[in-house]
Length: 334
Ligand SMILES: Nc1ncnc2c1ncn2[C@@H]1O[C@H](COP(=O)(O)OP(=O)(O)O)[C@@H](O)[C@H]1O
Ligand code: SF4
Ligand SMILES: [Mg+2]
Image (cartoon, rainbow, N blue to C red; front, side, top):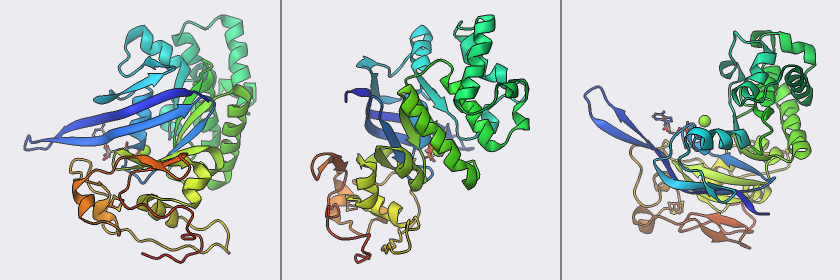
C-alpha cells in the first residue's frame, strides 16, 4: 500500500489575546506526523482538547497550517488556494461531528446534497436529480426525502444526509470528525455499518476522529494516539488498544470499560488535568501526569520511534514492555 496522504510535523498554532491585550499562542497541533495509505482507515484518538479536530480541519484546508507540510499523492498540499484547493477538496471531504449545525435548515435535503455538484459546475438538470436520488439511496434514505428539510429528520438520518453530501463529488478520502458521537447509542452502530460498507463499495480512505475506542476498534485498521498536539503512539488498532506501549495510551484504554466481564484490567488514574495548549511542559509533554516520569522526561523530547516488529511506534523514554502480560490480566497497577 502506498501513502495517499503524508503529514509531516504539522503545526496549527492560534494566537489569542486576553482582555489586557496580552498575546497567547495556543499550540493546538504542535508537530503531528501521520501517514494514511490508500483504502486504509486511520483512527485518531485522544482526550478532548488534544488537537484531533484541528488536525482533521487542517488536512481538508479548513485551518491553515502554521508549520510543517502535507502531501497528497506525492504533491504538496500544505497551503492550497484557488482552483488547486477546489480540486483537492473534491478528493478529500470533511464530515462534521454535529449533523444539525452543518446542514442549512432552510435548504431541502435535495438542495443540500446537490450543493457540491452545483458549486463544482457538475449539475445538469435531470442527471443531477438522478445523482441526488442515487446518493440518498447510497446512504439508505428513500429519494422522496429529498423534498424535506433537515429538522424533519432524526440525528442518524441527518448524519446520513451529511455523508451523502460529502460523497457527491466522488471523493477518495473522508475525514470524519466524531461522526457518531452526537447520535444515540442505538443508531451509532447503523451509521458505523453504513460507513464501513461505503468504504468497501466506493474504495474510500478514511481518517476517523473519535474519542470512543470501541468505535475506533470497530471501524479502523490503524490508530494514531494524540496527546497535547502530538502523536504519541501509532500502530494497528487492535494491537495498540490491546497492548499499548505508551503510558498515555495505557491510561486511555484503562479508562474505558472492558468489553467482556471476564476481562480484568488495571485502572490507571492519571494525575492532574490536561495542561493548557498555551503552556506545554518541557521534554515529554505527558510527564506532568505520567507515573513513569523521571529526569530525562523533563528535559529530552522523546521521538516517535519504532517498537516491536516495526509496525508500531511510540514517543516515550520508558515505554511499557510490549507483549508482557499486563493490562488485560490486570496485574500492573502503577
Ligand atoms: N479556532 C481556535 N482558536 C483558538 N484555540 C483553538 C481553536 N480551535 C481549537 N483551539 C484549541 O486547540 C486545542 C485543540 O482543540 P481541538 O482540535 O478541538 O481538540 P479535540 O478535537 O481533540 O478536542 C484546544 O485547546 C482548543 O481550545
Ligand atoms: S517519556 Fe517519560 S513522561 Fe513521557 S510518557 Fe514516557 S515515561 Fe512518561
Ligand atoms: Mg474535536
